Image (tube, rainbow, N blue to C red; front, side, top):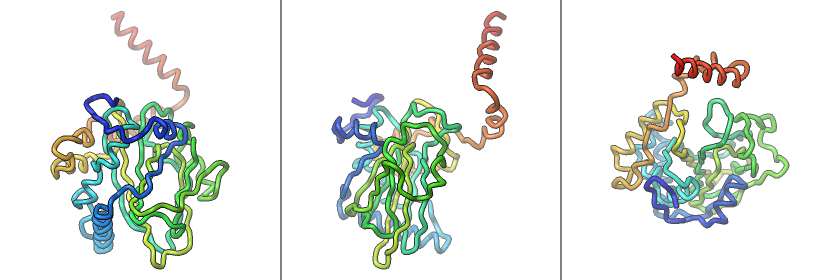
Length: 280
């Protein structure tokens, strides 16, 4: 049972939770109803038009995209994986068409530096028109979330198959994939797209208990979500708690100064200094 006041609907079975912990992703095929799916597509279409015309592109003000950040179909499943409260980190949206380039292997776990996976961060990849083998396939490398590595550790392999990798290229409209943010994944470019748009949204959540890197622009979006009522009468207010964020830009210079040599030496210096203060 999740802690800190979240009452999960137990949307996931223990088998699914175990599968996620082992492989780093779960697929939910065709879970959005047609009405929600259509409203989201309309918002994405308007967003793309606005971007082309240099007009409003703040996703939180779009009624379907903004409220998607607290959509129970997604959030209640994320809650089963988190086991405690968590915060919305970001949302992106666009559609991709013919000739779309690929994205090389990478992961999206926010940590500076990459040292552990003690707390969970997930990304939710949403495909409003599904995937059909055109424009771009989703590639994932099961189990890679369990290894500590830089985001671009496999980038030299571009979007080629890796030993054990899985290609996801056949999803129904309204499908989504929850991935551990440390899972290596890529988008392989594919021909086609003359009559198919690859509608793509990703939204991300991070477990409470530590401070996560997030620029202040993201803090502003979470406050806006509360102002617009995306917390659904307070039920999901915890999603927009900015107290678990720090702005990494405030610490880059200090970090670069401290992140030299042996961490053990720095830890011992801190312990010795603390002991001296106690003696004084």
